[in-house]
Length: 277
Image 1 (tube, rainbow, N blue to C red):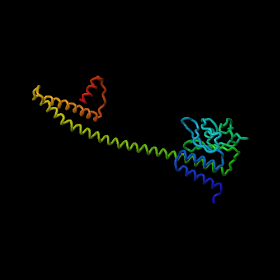
Image 2 (tube, rainbow, N blue to C red; image 1 turned 90 degrees about the horizontal axis):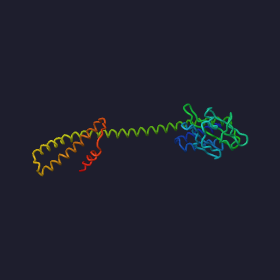
Image 3 (tube, rainbow, N blue to C red; image 1 turned 180 degrees about the vertical axis):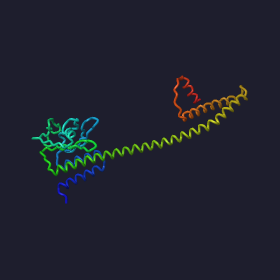
Image 4 (cartoon, one colour; image 1 turned 135 degrees about the vertical axis):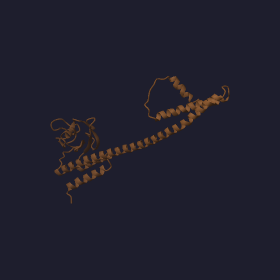
């Protein structure tokens, strides 16, 4: 049979594991601050995440009294900065109602109205994630057993956050891999279509050359004033147009380097319009 202290420690760890199973998110953080507040009987509990890019602590979740719920702390401000610098829990106990005086000087602007403030760093061997704030309006002293339970619970919280972040990174990497596989599949289809288009272009160009050659021979056999010359000229015109399209397609599929040259825009527009004649 577990003692009450061990039972509380085990219950907190079990509940944290259940919250972390759903992943790092608003519901996890909201459930965590509520759990710490109720388990250790404080009036306020908040989790501040450390934002490396901005060098500040940002309040991610809180539960309890709204008084003194500071949204942000600078990198060198308050008990959060002290806990990050020293890598250990910071206990602030004020006389009367204000536990805002920091060891070595300075104040914590979130301490007004509270007699006890406990700040625990959320840190592991890899990185510093943030801090856990606990505040009480009445003087509050944790027993050695409760302190041990608190230390174990904050370590478990840090592990849960780390695991959730790794899980999100793995999911993001998996999504990126799936998108890359889909892109490769589309690329393979495009390459197959390019090969097919190249083959068709070569197959079409051969009969077009024959049609163009026979058209030239017909022009020499038909009198210039014959009504048949109109049809022959039209065949010749359309054959040249198709040959130009096919040659352009083959040139594009050959992956030849692009050569930019100056040209007259009017000639380009006139040539484009001739395709619709």
